[in-house]
Length: 137
Image (tube, rainbow, N blue to C red):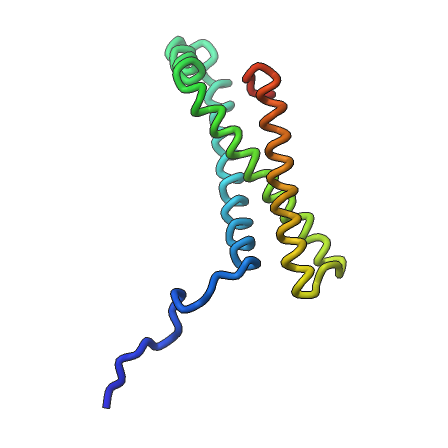
């Protein structure tokens, strides 16, 4: 007699937990930040190699003039990922020191971490807006 049921429980029967969601987004933000660092290093290296190349300046002008909104959006998203990753990293360091290990405090520290990340990102975006839309280097 064959019973039609799955071999193991599927993800759809589990209710997503706040801690697992934060853990997944911590890994995603870390991978995104590593990718952004890699692309920025490659972009600056290409710029160093082709400083006398005329088409490089045309490409750079196109990026800064026509895609300014895209660059600013990418910088803001990177700032949000950095603030989230940093805040969650501080939360993990506090766990390593033995703080906030009870279940109720884990959820409370997660909510506080999320608000801190949003607040830091918002402060950076406001600072960027007050500097006349220039990307701070």
